[in-house]
Image (cartoon, rainbow, N blue to C red):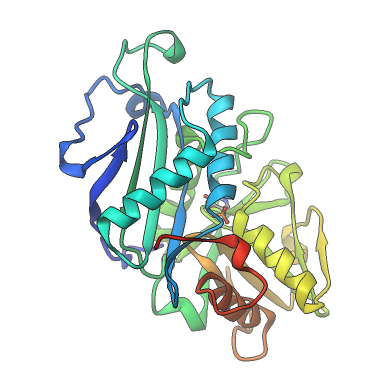
Length: 312
Ligand code: PMP
């Protein structure tokens, strides 16, 4: 993401507390608890154009993560993951778009301005869609992005539940990516307090050594990404070796390649990490996974249909 990221408009229709409404009718009060204290959880999901109409990628996996995250924050979510998935499909169908980004948000709404959110604020929820292009810049899709290590360390899993997409938790990511932007980079890399690598502001990190891909897990305070899981599955199916373990910045600096994964960023190669250049061209594993991922999400790779929820 950069200053170049195109501004996209939210869809005309949204799902709000159980009903499809016109998005313009949703008004949030200045006393909405989440606006003050980040007391909500959200998801980022994509849907893609396929030969069988629009298809949402790994919809149930995203909704299950949303439901788990809601529990951490004592949000009183009245809908199941299945119901939220159906609501998503209905919203896309009403909107009539063939591809885009989906943002469900479950949050403490209008109530007293105190921290005991669950003791006075309703749990509200909406699902909105919007257009999306390449999150880390259209111009970087093939050449890869420039990443810098930020001074802001990743919030440890003992401080916040890093496996949840908690709204307030993202102040850590915002500080990090703002610093990266100010220094002319596309994305920030956050380290943990013990010096191991955590993740990007909105992506998981993979690196390559001698033909093997390596990534970390929840013990490194990452959000265990659904794209990360997709890449690990694809690696297994393609016969590419993978390893899941904590790793350090010197190991990353010594990598043969580096790439980032996330719903918005998809699979994006890194061409530079603070002056260290990595290959990003044809034949690199970053390029191979980026291509394979696009085939899978667009329904062009047999064997992965169970990851697609068709809208029509
Ligand atoms: N880490 C962070 C901090 C993120 O915000 C994201 C994007 N959701 C990811 C990793 C990647 O997760 P996913 O592949 O599920 O989108």
